[in-house]
Length: 358
Ligand code: SF4
Image (cartoon, rainbow, N blue to C red; front, side, top):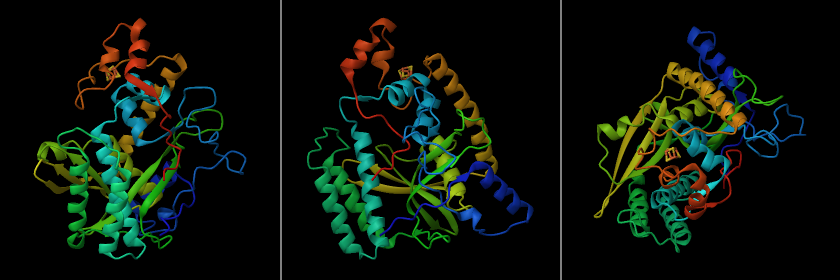
């Protein structure tokens, strides 16, 4: 199946103006503009006025990032020093996180399944291909984590697949192209912001897994895995939440102006089984406007740090999210930190929000 194509690049101002026209009654429903899809990242020299500097998300010869995704924004908001270590230096832990791998594989399996179904493959055959692919990809994965290991991963994917026939979500069909809304790459300019550099606006980019129709609403869909029981506190952590706000915003600007928020499927991994629950996190247009307003200030802040070549430590974040992986580094005196970084981490390929992922 061809994933939904990529159309014209939009901007935050265009999308906001379209929303205001709808609110005032000037344009009701799906105008061509409101559902237009974004272009792939334009490349310098192809006649576009937006330059991507050969898929480098930073301005040439600087640490000023102009193309941001939810991951890099989240890192920066959490702690500028953490952002520096991961985004600018490219440090990664020597030992793969079982939580990260489990989450990636579960996402990938769900994505593979939806693609196969959209291609017209029958459920049982799609299940076969998804599980086969998962077993191949994880054959060398040797996690010793009690809850998140290969066995519980395969069980979780199989149980999720078995529940598919009774699932009451429907893949949304994009009115602009007639394509199923799966694997939607997005990028759009933040044209109300000051420029990041000469002729270079800031951009938001990333990828949405799937847009779904559920209970009369159009929602982005996301998956989370957890080892705790999802209760009111768990669901409350998604509002406010950087990723959920950005995904709602991106889906509205680039694909579907009527989108209301994100439908989250949580897989609770237990020793004896996996339990699936669902929650929805909604965003109003006013909340999204506020998120963008805040982002302009955050990006200005990032620019100031880049120009000073100094990234402050946000030491109120060190114990959050189960403890930051750089605690062992940041707790050392500055003159010996490089030694601790090189001991505990490797410099891998840098995270690049402009890179289109397979
Ligand atoms: S340990 Fe604390 S200060 Fe260091 S990178 Fe992590 S959150 Fe930032």
